[in-house]
Length: 342
Image (tube, rainbow, N blue to C red; front, top):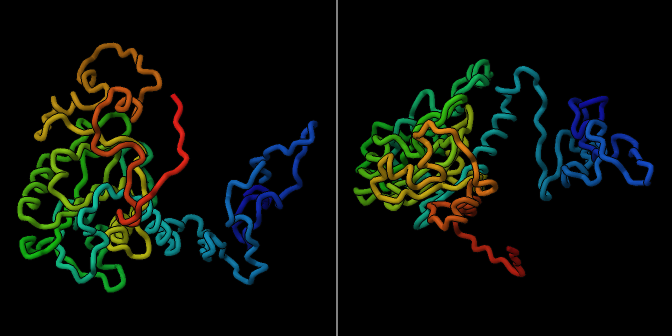
């Protein structure tokens, strides 16, 4: 907020359109220039919310988005990380940015009366994976507050069931398996795109019981799921969701106010074999044959990176770039008048 000309300034009673913050700057040709500091833009990038003067409506601290009032969180300086309003916003971001890859039989959203069992190392962990490693990790304020695991997140929902990771999965109708792969960090790559072998065995074990299995993964990047995903009913990818981890995921699982609407920002490759040894994995991913060599790399693929590489090589993948179910997979989208150019 520079000179009171930001989009929403701390202490202001209203959200004001950025164009109104300063006088437009006019170039010699008469065109209005963009002034990122002053708040003048060729077009308003902030949408309807920035065009509403809430003070005039008698609703301080609120803006209208999609016709609905949304409360703006009060800035609390060094205490922002524990602000109830901003933690609730984090819950919503986690739920809505999670990607639902599979939902057979409409198992999600879960009913709060369903017989559910929690398994997996992350389900009831006092320190669930919420961020990657690296120099930026040190000193994060969120490390000073308890992290929410999925068990506690589910219990915190209105009339949320009290689940126990020690309960017998055999007595449940639905088994939620909560896992995380090898941790990603600054300075080195993950050794594999697969889950830990113990977690793959766990998923296969519960799938063999004939139960509806829901797999939740805190994923730091692309994953290979093809060695186990055929036997599960649902897959929810929640990335690295921070301290509110379990609360936001619980909302996505139960459809509590917000639902998963995310899309994959990269491709999930498909392993060439069901067992997917490390050699099979290397043969299934882009440039996998070069991973274990120490040769000087010449990157000649140019723009054929990510999904473009798989498409150009006509390689089948498990879940393509941009994939993600919304409305829990109950909505059909039809496109018309679509054109493609080579």
